[in-house]
Image 1 (cartoon, rainbow, N blue to C red):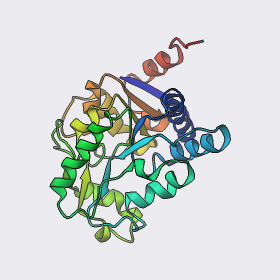
Image 2: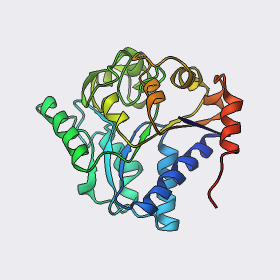
Image 3: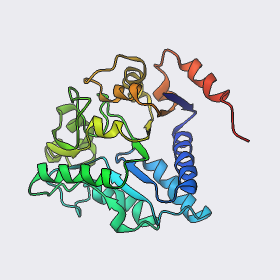
Image 4: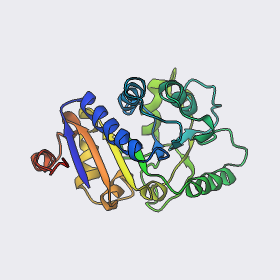
Length: 258
């Protein structure tokens, strides 16, 4: 597990984008797992800039999104399908046939979730999985008490998650109560996981995920067991880490390839 601490939100966005861009230069047909929410917006803006200014190519990239609200059609302005096309896909040269986002309108959610897992496997698994973290420590919509071996499935959202996401809707009553989400087990099979966190409001949760016990009550803590998990944090999000100075020293003194 690597912990990278940058000065601000812009710093974490550029750090994550540079990592992904470097990977795409070496593997143009990479499989990317993508997240929604406010945290990855800066990452996506930087990837768009790299595409426009430096020719970063998405034409062969395959994507799988982490989750989607149940009951929201792709055209709904708060669906994650809408979010991804508005904030990334419409601005790069990705092939729409290579984009995979859970179908919140699926008639048979169980069958759809099995198909989604099979599609990930058919493409050889996810190379890089981008993650955010909820205030209760969840990754994707793996709420507290989610099995650390869980697969893509239907998940009931907690009241805390509903309240956290209410700012994107007119009120909390409009927030869907269910979502389709990749499971913790699915996420852990990605070859690299990059978790981004920004702001002091995430500091205690980030500390639990990185330095606390591995527990289903904080699904992000499972990343402690991942062979290549990278936490990219700004200073406020890293402020509660007991080994803050150590992580920074390790990163700043890491041998660099010439």
